[in-house]
Length: 77
Image 1 (cartoon, helix red, strand yellow):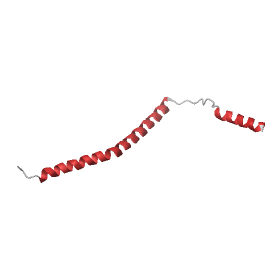
Image 2 (cartoon, helix red, strand yellow):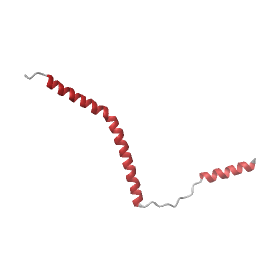
Image 3 (cartoon, one colour):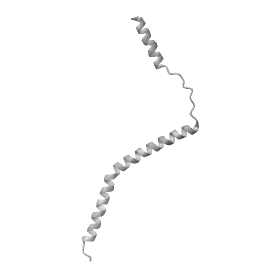
Image 4 (tube, one colour):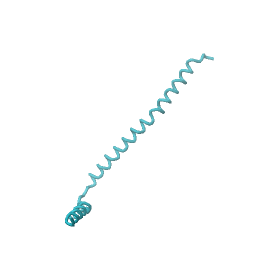
């Protein structure tokens, strides 16, 4: 039983201790990554904005159409 606990403790310790990666991301790759991230975020925000703005645009167009039909339906003075 003690051997199983020791093995489990060693495995848990080895799994949770992180070694340094020794990786380098140059400025070109970093800027490309940031550009792609900004593009993705802006596209997502634009899509949400268009979906949320759809009812407002539809309401405004119906309001303009109703106002235009009221002007044409009135007799000239």
